Length: 257
Image 1 (spheres, rainbow, N blue to C red):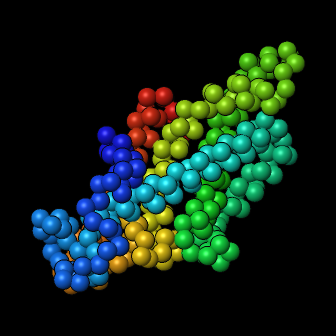
Image 2: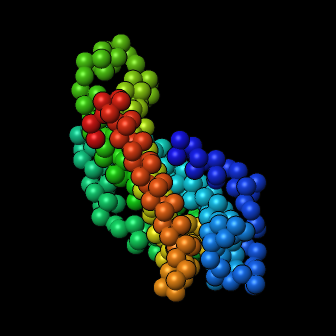
C-alpha cells in the first residue's frame, strides 16, 4: 500500500499539489505549519508540501531507470558468464570485481563531468554501480541451474545456448531477479537523494527529496525543520517499504540471496 501510494503521488503529482512548487510567496517566508501550508514554507516562500509531492516524480523515475538498466544489463552479463563458464566466466568475474571497487560517488563525479548536473548523470552512475552486484547474485543462481540435468537434456536435443538461457535459465532465476530489483529500487532512491543533496543530481529550482534536505538544513538550524525532515522521511519510508517488499518476496519464493 505504501509503494502504491508513492507511485500514485508521483503519477498524479501535478493534479494534487496545492500550489505551484516553484511559486514564491514573499509574505510567508519560512512560515510554520498552518492550514494553508500544512508543512510550512521554505526560505523562498515556496510551499513545502507541494515541493514534496513534486519531488516524488524525479525520485521514482530515476530509481525506475536505474533498476531497469541494472536488471537488464546485469542479468544479461550473468547469464552469458554462467552459460560459457571457464575462462569467460573468470574474465567476467574480474571485470565485475573491478567495477565493484569504484565508489558510487566517484562514478557520479565522472558522469557529471561528461553529461553535466541533472538526473541523467546520477542515473548512469548508480546504474553502473549496481550492475556488478546484480550480476554477481544472478550469476550464482544461473551457475547452479546450468549444472542441472534438464540443461544437459536440452543440449542433447540440439537446442541452442541462447534458447536454453531464454527459455529455461531466465524463468528459473526470475524470482531472484524480482527480489533483487525490489531491494535495489529502495537503495537507488537513497543514492539519488544523496547525490541531489550534494548538488550532483536534480538542480534547483526543481523539486527533489534530496534537494529538500539540502535546502532545508539551514531552516533545521533556525527552528524550521519541516522541509528537511519531510524530505528525510520520504526517503526513509521509500527505502524501508521496498526493502520489506524484497524480503517478503524472498520469503514467498524461497529465494536465498
